[in-house]
Amino acid sequence: MELFIINLKWMAFNFFLALIPVFLGAAVFKKEFTFIKFLGAIVWFFFLPNSIYLITDIVNLVGDIRYISGIYLLADAILFLVLIPVGIVTYVLSVLPFTKRFTHFHLFILNIFVGFGLILGRVQRVNSWEVVTNPQNVVLKSIEMLTSIELILLIAIMAGLCQVIYILFKDKVIKLVRT
Image 1: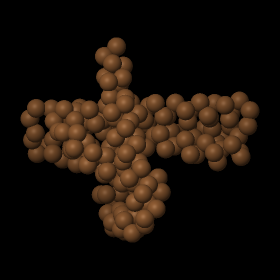
Image 2 (image 1 turned 135 degrees about the vertical axis):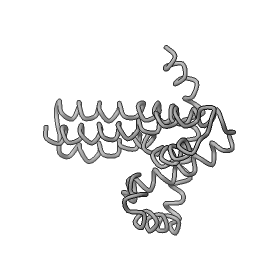
Image 3 (image 1 turned 90 degrees about the vertical axis):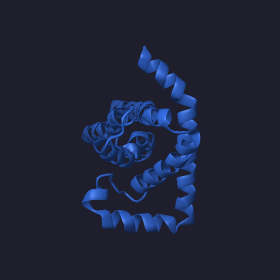
């Protein structure tokens, strides 16, 4: 029960982080682009991986199986499984305003950065706000990643996954939001 409550708390926090680029994307990529919107775009860029990051949280379920059983394990599994579509929807909603202003090539480049951010967070355990609060750590962990063939491969896989998710789910998410 205790682990379930702990999971619920960090899942809620991760969901909050996933909403930041959704709202910033909607606000930033409108017609006029001002200096304030430019700053918002920077924050959007650094928080964007948090949206799709939710789908990677499923890896935590494997560890939970050793500590939770019965109804709490079932509830835990349902929570993790809910994060996957939420991650897809928040990612598409975050990127959608960007793609209205930029090309598919720009989306591909963006997804490389998102893949980088995903691995920086999931593997290197760096948080988005550390760009401001601990930039030295971000730089050091980024260099570590770029010197590892395995992590570069993971970045490429995650970038490709983000590209595929956006292409496959864009129309479905738009339809969902309109209903």
